[in-house]
Amino acid sequence: MMAETKRVRICVVIDPEGKWEAAGSHSWTDGQAIRELDDLSGDLGPAPWAYHWIEADVPVPVERSDDVIEGKVTDAR
Image (tube, rainbow, N blue to C red; front, side):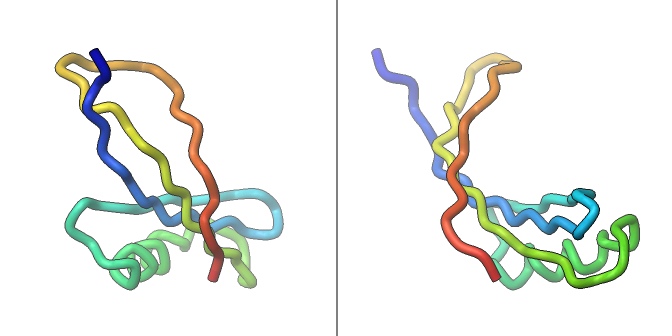
């Protein structure tokens, strides 16, 4: 039997040194995710930062899972 999955979209920002932050929520617009990252990015080095979107089909588990799920970068800002 195939497990149910949910398509997720996560925004990731990365600085030139490779430090990164990620944000996303089932109820956020893309703009809300970017604003959240802008608020969190104080831990990152100075701009310019690159924003990327990662999309993945995540199983909706009945129990906790530590599985690693492969994602796909869909576009960048």
